[in-house]
Length: 427
Image (cartoon, rainbow, N blue to C red):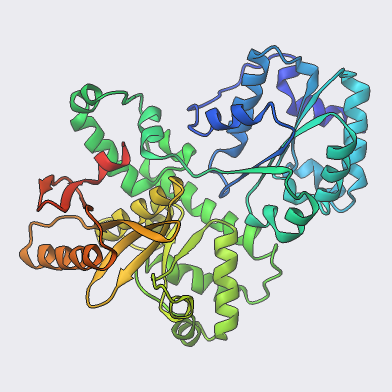
């Protein structure tokens, strides 16, 4: 019944002559997890490279002499599975056909790509996890993959890895530039700066990094946005008011880094503030947009203070909202937000009398303050950025702070240092 699609999707059974792309930074971490019983869950926005990363993991297993017949890969988003996805028993039938076809002996490595397309998939995994020798590696484009229901069902059995689009190091690798030392940095500095401008404009989605034509890049990014909105958000959350959802998403993408409140958005979009909050949460669950809270030691004040919003990728912002040259400082801010998230930081923004773009919290203490702007050459800009970061330094008793700019490098005083954003991204 499923033999043909199994053979089509599992090229490693015959040969493995497929493009493995840029080896992702997360691969090393995943390799450490492969020997554990735990289910590896790999989540991230659509088209960020999850499927390619799975192929890289398969390649690692083959290099470790795992038998090819002990590896099963299933892309469950494939249209072939559409008629079967409503009945979880079909996953059992697929697995049965695999056993009959390959007759594997010993431990099985089962890769389930975009697993959320099958209803009640977690029940299938729980039963197999407890009663069979299967190592599960699963992916999804929605944070509900780790919903409270799943956490309860598979308590203590999952190891989650979040995959972002390319970081700047990976983007440079796509351009055949590898930075291993300060010498590499100095030798390639002009080329790095050129590619940094491209990275800011077009973002880090893996497919985009290898395309040269700008019109094609824009068209593909627009399609990504539509797929996220019309496949990962609107149908999955049962949204009826499509026009206003589109308007809200477009507004937020066009106002990256600006404070907003649900109440003001509700008046702008003509939806209740509760609905606006729900829809914004859906954008976050699909990894399209993320909220940044104002920091306050009072949780109540933190909740009631305006938030800011940032996007998963600057390429999406540019393809949907505003022109590249319109406000490059906001794009720089977005890059820093995503990179801090990628580095696993808990972040907020600061605002009392003045504002600081990002502060980093570790346990119960603020440990870092970061301002982001295109340049501090203009006296008014310089004064504003320094006043904001000085206020953060004083309030949180910090010893050092950063101002990230396009290309300026300066020791402002013993506490504040300005460095180029592109250098910081390569740290």
